[in-house]
Length: 115
Length: 110
Image 1: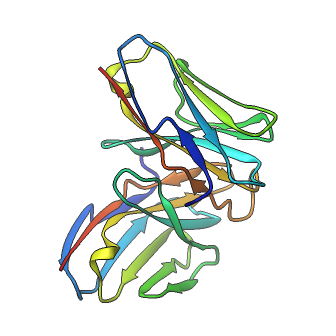
Image 2 (image 1 turned 180 degrees about the vertical axis):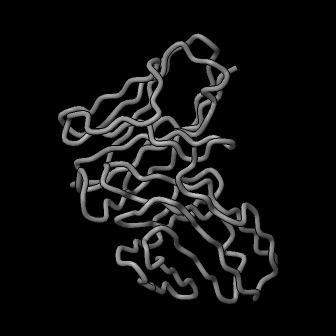
């Protein structure tokens, strides 16, 4: 158990819909990262928040957005869903924002299926 | 474009065999991490290497960071079925994010 929690575990929805994925980082970690994992692309970095502020953006679509709340939990919002958005979405957390080893600890993921 | 190339993509061996998987890049990384991921679960951090030429051992697993900090290898001695999983390498450069390879899927059969 990494200490990172994600809900829900599974999510099935239809094209055009909007969903929210939730993540709680390990106790003491200030950074939260969101990743998308698909069979053909592997693990792709989407976005990072550190202590409530956006710190880095990766391959995140404009239809996707995220935020980190004062209690440090984070939410990833996916809207106007398309079939290609079906994937595993992981949240990871770490102590530091950058520098050092930046060892990240991953949650169990949310499997999103868009029908 | 994948910054990190992992090989082989798939590997199926019998219990007791040795194996090596590779992680290569044209980029220099300040650190490199190896993760193992089992189906339906998140990646689990195995090790972080920081110094060029560094070798770290974790029981039957030996990790090496290339001298130029562009590549790494993972060697497993006497593989066991419990080693089955997806092995991912991830490199960190000056930015915040980790750059992941697509992984090596290892199957160890009894």
